[in-house]
Length: 115
Ligand code: AMP
Ligand code: ZN
Image (cartoon, rainbow, N blue to C red; front, side, top):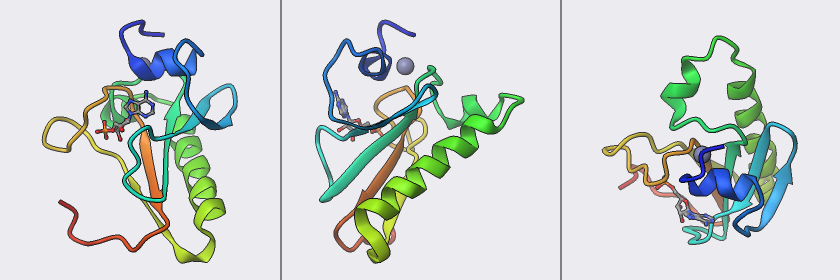
């Protein structure tokens, strides 16, 4: 738990959020500023600044779990219409909150290339 980290504080229940999934390892919340009709953030409860940090862990279980839950939520919320998963990483990747999270976006057609 990093007390200066907004997502750690959400995971700890100190800051309110709309929780759509939670277990001991992973929490998923509605994005406060949604960019699509479906916009969920899936993150580890434990603080990892970004996906590179998590990739350095010897145990890949959390990486697998994050994407498994993100995939299930994306499918549940958009059915066969499809969805997009995004992991912004670092300043040029557009990351603004330094606690790893997977964006799950859907409910409208997605453009490519992204901005
Ligand atoms: P990123 O720019 O990839 O780091 O994404 C950070 C995301 O967190 C943005 O889409 C924000 O809208 C979202 N966000 C920031 N604060 C909160 C919050 N308190 N509750 C839910 N989502 C948040
Ligand atoms: Zn954190």
